Length: 536
Image (cartoon, rainbow, N blue to C red; front, side, top):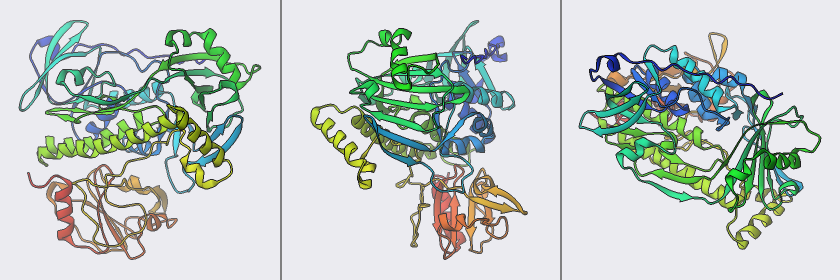
């Protein structure tokens, strides 16, 4: 019954520059071939950039590690052409249940409305995610994956970064116009540039156990506070692919990680949760502590940080990988525009402005979840338990229960790239928000709104007559309701408040830059200029 995933090994290959000894300058070098580095490679390549990816390992992640992937990152991967395999293999879910001791407190639905291509969440082992993206990278002529390449030192110059890279054949020199650090929470790149990484480090320890079992439990997220089988602590259960189930157990501050990871100590905990008579096998286990902290600046000269190299959060709420993918989504179009000379280098400063804001939002939510799950004193615990008791009887108390606020996109509400509204609007599609998907009909065939958006700027016209706006390299694609597509279920008009007509300027990362009730070519050009950092 034990899962027998065959971990691939990727070949180390000498590059031409390594053989010749001639130092070559690359446009973009990415450090780290985990989910963030691979996403960055695919996104940069999709925008016409040649990239080199360096990784000191030669396989995918061992152990399932990150498992929960949210709607927005899946939409980004869908744009990059790699989501379908993830969706086919992953376990879709949207319902969660919260228990206090032996009673259910309440349940929640993360996507109660219909009319979305991508589900609220899928659960999928990280090794599958990486495998699919490595396959896609290997098929792209603009992506050069280099395994067993470790950056051991770097120095920055006005127009490039110089690196020493260690391989099985020794150390050689490389240069990059831009270096993107996706090398994880213990980032060597962050240390090399001397970046601060500040925040809170928590003493709480948690045991992760991935088990293989045939079970009739529904594909939902179950979270327990103070259950009978793990008194005084919390626990979590949800399903992954291949009949693998993820179990989390809160441990005491003084627990010994090495002792807790022993099978003879894990198995009794699992049996207490799922029952003595359930057959299972232990696949993987780890004990972790976590931090809620971030880098002080996402950009250090020509080095840009993303994912865990830029921020760490607690695992409650699945905010780590999901947030990192959105870092790349924000960075890719900006870096491409700067490299091509289409936008000023100052546009990259807005990467820090927007994604540091999102990181702070995630850190706040993550810290609040941690404080609720692991109260630090008697008063906090009494408050927590009172909320849980009340939530069973009163609906208004349920939002106060915090078993990990699940990852959602952070709107860039105060971004300098936004153009402020000049009209009254209803709904959520304000500037800085990522565009909501909805069903469309095109040439009599069903489709989705996000699939129709341009890789550049899009001018979405819903009941407003528009003409082409010449904005040079940023001239937007015009997408008009009734001409280019039909609102097949009326959900676009509803979600985008098109009752009086609506015109939306949508950025290359599918975030709203501006919106109007009537067309003004000058206003559109001004909004595009603002959204791209102004004149070069």
